[in-house]
Image (cartoon, rainbow, N blue to C red; front, side):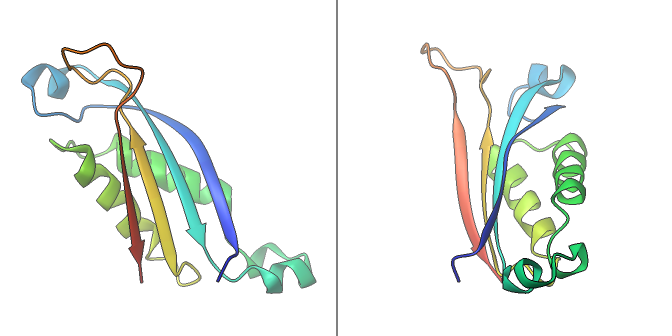
Length: 119
């Protein structure tokens, strides 16, 4: 299946990280989600009931990322993927969690983790 909905650059302030200071002070995370689903019925019907409500999905992503704290962004990405896969229409999801302010000793623009999960 090649039909896909992309949610790109969802911004969430959250407390994820290995270090205590990351658990205490929220930092910016950006999340990209690609949802694979059969979109042909929606293309024919022009009915929201035949597709995925990307506004509602973006809110779900924000709630997952902004909710429970985790040490690793790998876990954050997994939790987002698990949540997206609860939607019956979603057969596959690719999630990238960006942590642009990761506390590393090398100057860099971004650190991210991408996972790809299927139903």
